[in-house]
Length: 353
Ligand SMILES: [Zn+2]
Image (tube, rainbow, N blue to C red):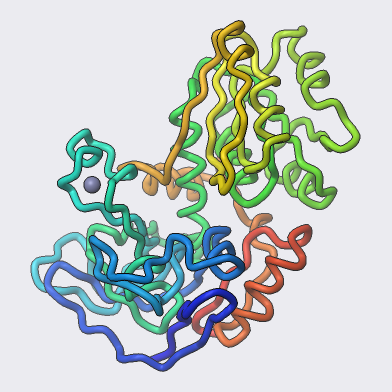
């Protein structure tokens, strides 16, 4: 069968590998649509960073790994001892794997596992293949009629769902999202679904500001030409936003996210950082601000996002900017994301095409 494997920096190949055998407790899935994540791109351009070069502590997986951790598909075989799933079920896949034994897991936070692994990133099976076997509990059933292409964007939306849940969203009227990449745009959609009245987005790209508007932002600003913090103050009777989400991964964005919140406001960091940012601790102390992090997702987030899409509270279709074939994954997938950042949000690989 075909599998898109990462062999090293700038080296992605469509390889022929053995079809996996469905073992006890597993399901075998025929992937339908697979999204390319910013973390995949990061590995392609600068890796291997997180992708293991030695056997992973939890999965044993190592280079070359099969990519694809944002995906939907159809169950084609059910292993022994599996209940609640049958052949033909359509599913979204929850990719994060945890050891269940470390102090984070014992604390009830497997998303912060010390031996965190991912299907399609640090294991030898991933969604970018003709067949994949995964532990059955990682297959989340989609309701009848749920489009499989939307099933592939559930995972990035769960990251946003969790980030919004970490923040005091229930008591918030005004939220600011700094950075309009895939995760920032996912946060915008979740804030809208959660009923936040004013959703302010700061993003430098014109096209991405348009996407932000289409997905639910009520105010968009260009930090290169607009004073975002002053504009947020104007909107909030000089107070500042109740909550902000740092989704840019750059210092200027982090500063905006922190400066733009009110007294005792909360900034949630969702972005991943190569370089440690500087924090204005005096501002944090003086205005009693909160700075928190949000990693991956928690139990129930997949179900919540699936329900929000099924009921129309979230319509992520504008996020999907391109659909390509597996053989085009490098040229029209990775290279397009690297070179046409402006025009692409989510590129999906249609495995059957
Ligand atoms: Zn753990």
